[in-house]
Length: 175
Image (cartoon, rainbow, N blue to C red; front, side, top):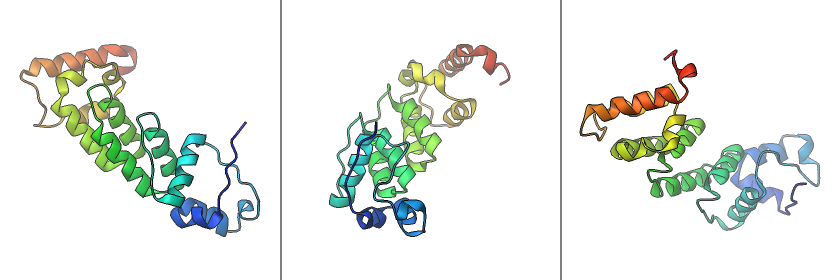
């Protein structure tokens, strides 16, 4: 049920330590004609291969996170950084929390910092979004723990914490 791609091993090995190791370390894949890649969407694999041959990648809102994930698996920081810059330049109140959670999951410092900065700047708008309720306790604290939080009244912060807490109250009572 997967898609088959044709490419040169040396081209992939040149851009990715993951593939370099796969093809040169004596793993069974190094002698196989076809290699099965698990956990990467076909469109993302196509974009990675295109990048391997052209050094260009076409990013869209629909493909950027899946491509970032593939680049993370394949250890291609140049693609990860392009994806991060795309997400940073497209931050808005609706997606900023999701981008922040995504950056936290992958440990991408710049993406995490820039999305957190955006959230702090647009705090009142962002906290009205459903994604705000998906933050972990530590993520919420990291956002609130700043003098840069753009609120005109502390009551807004209090109300957002109460809303967050009440969302999954049984699980959050420990906090």
